Length: 269
Image 1 (tube, rainbow, N blue to C red):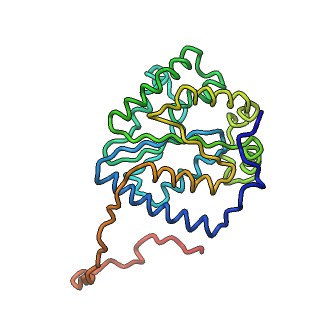
Image 2: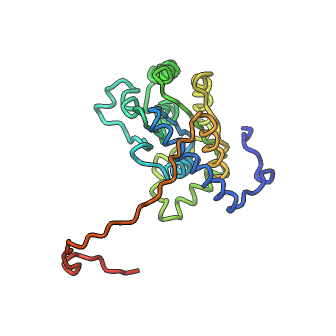
Image 3: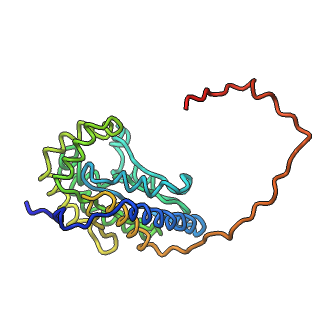
C-alpha cells in the first residue's frame, strides 16, 4: 500500500519556541471566535475523526484550553445503551448538536458507523449502506438549520501509530488510552483504510467536505487544524474595551470568624 505521508526527513523540524508562540496566537483567536459565537448566536459543530492515536484528543485539548466550558463543549459519547440502539441512528448525536451561542467539538461522531462499527462488525450491511446514503442528507439538514459544520480527518501512518501505541503502553498517565478495541484495531490497518476510503467517497461532499490533517507530527497537526478552523469561519473580533478596576471597598464593620475553626488542608508542598 502506497503511503500518503511525506517521509520524515523532508519535513522541517518545528521548534518548541515557534510552536508555543503560534499556539498562543491561535488560542487568542479562538477566544475571539468564542465571543463572536456567543454574541451572534451562531452554532458551530466540529467533527474530529481518524485512526486511534492520530492526535484528535490533543488538538481538542488545545482548542478548549482557554475557552469557556459553558460555550465550548466536548462530546465524546460512549457505547450506546440498549435504548439508544433501538433509536434512529443519528438520534443520540442530534441531541448533542449546538444551540445558539454554542460550540460542540465531537471527539468521534456519527461516523463511528462507517469506521469501527463497519470494521468490527457492530452493524450489518443494511445499516452501513443506509448510513452512507443518509449522512449527506443529515448534514445538509444541519447546515440548512444554520449550523456551521466542519469535519477533520487526522491521518497518521502505521509506523507513527505503532510508536504512539508503544508510548501509551509504557506511560502510566496514558495507559488508559489503550483499550482492547485499540489492540484489535491494530491488526486491521488495511480494513480501516478501506472503510475510510469508502466513507470519503460517499460523505466528502461540496457542502460538507472532509479536511485532512497530516498528523504524524502532533504539533504541526494541532497548529494546522486550529488555523484552518479559524480561517474557515468568518468571525468578528468582539473583544470588549479594556476595563479599569476601581479601588476596592474596605468593609470595617464585619468581623470574620477565626480561620483556626476551618479545616485547612496541610501544605505538603
